[in-house]
Image (cartoon, rainbow, N blue to C red):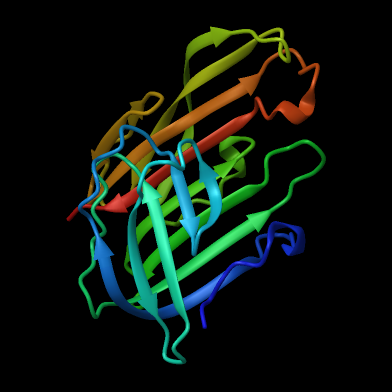
Length: 217
């Protein structure tokens, strides 16, 4: 028996309601797959939260709760190494929230030790300010790095992210697909795009923001 996400058709969207709240013991860890250059794939028991290239093997960890229910978390991110060992107790929260017609659902994964220490967080939404980052991380919109257009949007912009973390006084800006180390964490920019003139096809999902963080020391 596994702690699986329900099918997409049965997901109950709500205001920051966890779809999955899991506590258990780490059984296995795979940190040996090739490094990916970007934040590209997040899955819980095979149910995708975000994907760029699902043909690649993510780095995963498997855990089991006290009732024998199991969970597998898979993530593709640059030089990700799960900061746990077999036997560690962890908590996993998955949140999905639909903001409205044609907007990208807010979806995010938070992994902590049962003691509360943050181990990893990965999120995606239609805009950066819609992401509910953990209290240890603050993200804000940076400078425009690229302007473009498409059949669906007369003009769109790509942005840097500014990041701060607890325990480090610095604020760093970084661009699309870049990874920085700040305090005890690695942070990866998964992309921030905004439609500037009103998309002709709002369901295209031009507005998008994603980022990830994991403990490195």
